[in-house]
Image 1: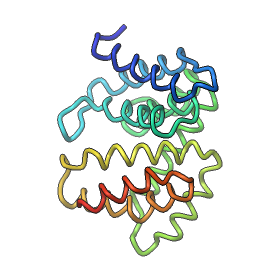
Image 2: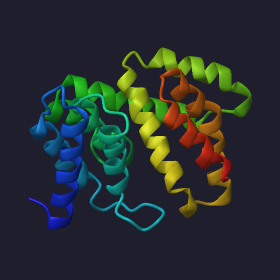
Image 3: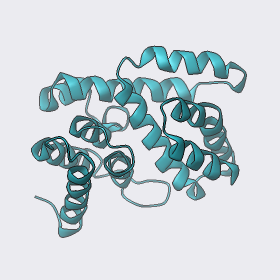
Image 4: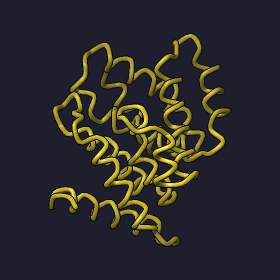
Length: 197
């Protein structure tokens, strides 16, 4: 199993998922397995702050459970969203462990990350359109919103250049998209956090 610290974190995530998704039954086993898998996959990784890398996918999943509640599959995919990009595991491993639905969401989030990393400010409109066309499943975009929101909440640990770039991307891409998804609270937080940089 895992330490008391991570057991408490898992309990907090499951509790918030149950509260937020009260109309639906929460698949605790799916979320617990994704939590365990991501924790193990990122066990040797650190964030720029020095924290264990797992704090990031955990916070992304927590944002979805608490602030953008949708379903347990999305929470599981959020826990796994950086596994393909940052660890030795690949999409086949995710599919074998969690099935097609979770794997497709994780794969979509990974593809969007690669796309956004290469965007140029002058091409914003075409990137916005491409993002929407690439995401046949809106849960992919919700994970990216939560991912970027957590990154903005922890920007102080990055270089000035990277802070500016991520803040500008949030203003150009994520704030307008979140507004179109009807997530006005997220749009406001994207803007507030970005303007600091």
